[in-house]
Length: 412
Ligand code: SAH
Image 1: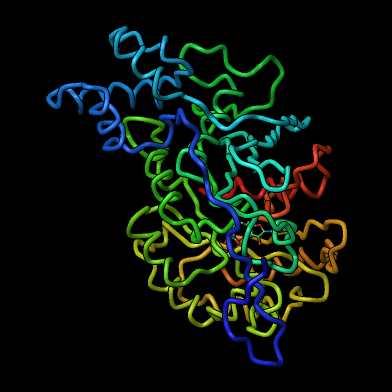
Image 2: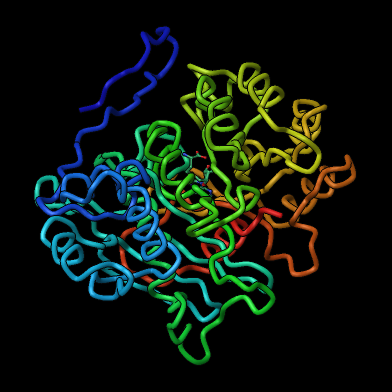
């Protein structure tokens, strides 16, 4: 069903925000991945673990799950055999199932993950992408199957199927990446010749929530998942290395700072409401001025903790130097970085990517205005960030797609 969110003025195309169609149906034997410590303790209570031991046992499990990456209960040698058997009767350690894996020659890995549930015979699937660079390994995770927002340049926006991921399915994407990279203690590591970061002790050092979906329309599970990912006694990723990208769900932006404390990226893409209304229809609900105000007051914003503004370069739509000038004016006073994303075309799209020299001119203007402008880095491949168009087809990554993905490795 397509539902219009707001009564749109007659002159407008309706907002066409889709409503989530599907709900998660938990398997009979759920996975422990993604449960909070309190939920783990409650699960143990249900297994007759005495209350005096529940916290300690939950802590043990946490360690096996997130430090050791245990894939079966048998590996949990510090847990009694009886409790392991009992856990095994009620729970699994399952991660999302890898339906397709692609490894590109530059090391980019893309996983199509199959999740429980299907609609009209179509399985619920999301994508997750790993981008290795010398000094970091960035994982781009999805927050929803599909997306409700209908951004006109986004391939995901054309897909109808939508359901929210659970916290476990979001954390599960990190687990899958580390499983496939052989990146748990005691594992052999990536296969010989694999391209992985050489100057980072961690293969997955950064997370960007920039895959399919609008994370702020699935706030609690995304928050809970990111807090697990950042937990010091588990996966222990610094919050400075976790970036959540939103199309601009203004009322929830302060909660990202207050309740998650990660880095924020905002998909701006246009400097006037008229153009942004077309590109990101959510703008009709939360126009640019309100979005900018939410950015200005984002909790924890400093020069060391800047907001990233994402800006997809669309030929003749938003890529003039006047746009660049207006962009600088718009973000004045906000500690910011700008990520220019070359548009990645998909079949049937009405947009084209800006010409390369126009992207460079645009980037240079921004750089001269004093903003970090990744397109100018010597390698020229750190340019951009984007992944809304991650496809489910198991075809090879295009050069443009690789370029766009590179940029997601953007956090400092
Ligand atoms: N809903 C969130 C996160 C998903 S989109 C958001 O809007 O930020 C992640 C990024 O990829 C966004 O900046 C999005 O605008 C960009 N993107 C989507 N489709 C794209 C395409 N075809 N080419 C380039 N970037 C795209």
